[in-house]
Image (tube, rainbow over all chains, first blue to last red; front, top):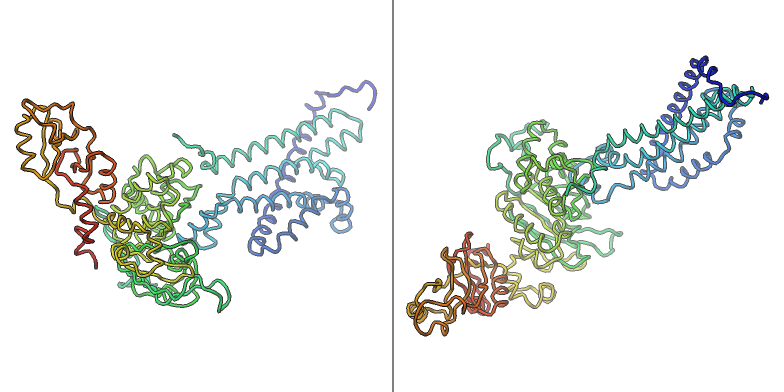
Length: 222
Length: 406
């Protein structure tokens, strides 16, 4: 850091709002893509496990290994196949969501009380109707809890993908900040990333409360 | 393509015009013919063994027995939650194996001990589940839900939009019954429906349910492990013993008075004579004319009336005819008006609907072995005595039961 350089230069922020906004949008997009794709894959895996219980250990184990691989190593491994690209970044990000999402979807489905399942069968729900109209709605709070963790984690991880030319706000931190010895960009990138995580988490929680009014009705009205 | 057929027996097709009281499909005959269920391989001991039962339309058949007797398994074979290994089950002559399980279950009401209300649906939505599965129009579902909540004693306006977590245990159970009745099924299966409720509320729910049944006349298969509940609820009781063997299938009265074997005798208990008293009600007895006195009655008059009467006690009542206490014949000596201070307070008040067993307990608990039978305004209509009931016990003939054996 050059001597005399202030920690935060407001004029830089004002003059670069367009760049900051663009990176923020990119960050949001990468997160949404990763969590969205991760959720679709996890949902399919969870349904598969429900049908074939024996797959539980294999699927959870594989997701656990993916989760444990350091991101840098994963990039290095993927670059020969998908290059220094958006796809490489997303494959890594999606991999990290799987363990959390698969586990929470399964936990959510397991949280449905057995008497509710028996009643649903006795009423004459088909197994598909039972899944969509009874099990998933009841599992929703736990599934959303998983989505919140996955989203917050992914927002943090996106910054790392700046190492392979992506990165959203991570670009501000690594390229404009660290590489150029420019603290203002580091602060702006980090603060916005944290703010984004907090906002996304609050938004998902609000959505869940709205979708599951029954889960907060507990306790009763006397 | 079958839905429009004129001979379609589905309750949906049968319900045409809405009217008051709720139009309902009354029960269908349920028949089990040599039904066996084996969970293990062929040759292993069966859970239900060659069971044959005919449950007449509109009757309550209680399956009772110790745990492991296959009563729940038997019930679940009727809506195919459990598939029979062999044998035939029919509802109104139609083999249940010929229907898809889903269609079959939508035509059979189902109530379980833990209720199993859907926590994410309101009371109204829970009640309307089967009509929605059957794709009734919205307006008709709404109307039906209102009618049903009313039927089970929950005010629709107050309860429709509540969630199950906001209800008491008894209220949940009622919603469970309303939900099972929603599509007006001819047959209802109830698996220990009142098992999770405390004894006082259970008694109330049972009475309510019997009143409801006298209106809807469904064929009900009711599972319990409680003999007293079986005696109270059943038109017919099937007593099963371990291994799913039918020990006896008969009316409660016949089972209590003529147990088929030692197992049944032990299962219904040594006090089966007393239990039989639950089958008759006070209204079936010939009431004794009371000697009614008030605080102003002259002792000479009371004495004369008591001498002419069959009882040794006069009943002291207030000006509305509501009983206050008993006056012993020996306490009306001398002259002047009756002294209410000398009355033995707390006459047992007995309603005509009370069972003889409960009436006996009430009378034995008080020092005077008489009961004052009162109407809904608590005015005395007559008396009963412990002697009358012990006569019933000794003779073996239940009053009011002579024509109820078939």
